[in-house]
Image: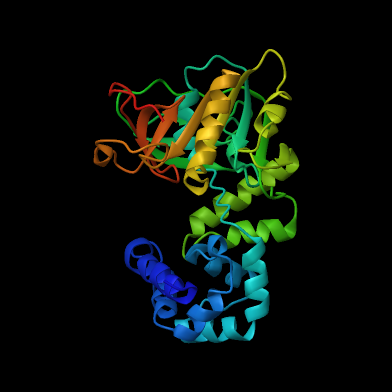
Length: 326
């Protein structure tokens, strides 16, 4: 299959399987691309790892494309083709959804603190502040920082016989990313908010509020490849003595080639630290019975604790099931 046919198939699949029920506009744009040979050929000049439909659509919106029907959007893309290709080629999907903290929180509940958090694939670091956000779980509990209700309020469902939830004490936060984003930089903020799909106003406002919070007290962000020798070990060594180091991987594993995932897990095991991940079942290996899980899975040190929404909208605790080593 040549590159243009690959683009057509990829956008057709997105229009059919991913966009419906979430963004009618993205479904229309993707279906339009799939049927437009000239535009497929244009987008095929973007490297294959940088032309996912949500990334292409986000970049065009960031650059000023109208949120109109497909013909208007496609005309704008053709007019600004050079800028679109260049920007997509240097960008990657860096969805930085603070709501994922609502899925991570149960895994922190019975880890003795204070915690030092290190995130792989941190983007701008919005998932490094679980102690600074407010939570409204259904049917409960409600959790707030000691100072006041946070400007970032996360709504999620919490089901099953899981641990009693509490806000962790976090004394250090750091992240590793191939291209870290700066929560205070207008261009980086514009890119992150453009990754929010059209119509997701509550999500847009949540990310903007989290960006403000992070910009006021930024984490340590290191540009690097966590799968490369010495990178993860070097940043982990910066964690303060007396804190429990917890490495988090919320949603990043599917974007890392399998050999790299295995190297990360081997390094974490060698370091002897706790690590928490959110990922699709089977992200680390072929797993029997993966259809048992409703959504992604929350793991701690490879053991499945819960089924979770990929972006954190629900947690279904299942830690009594046999753990599956990743």
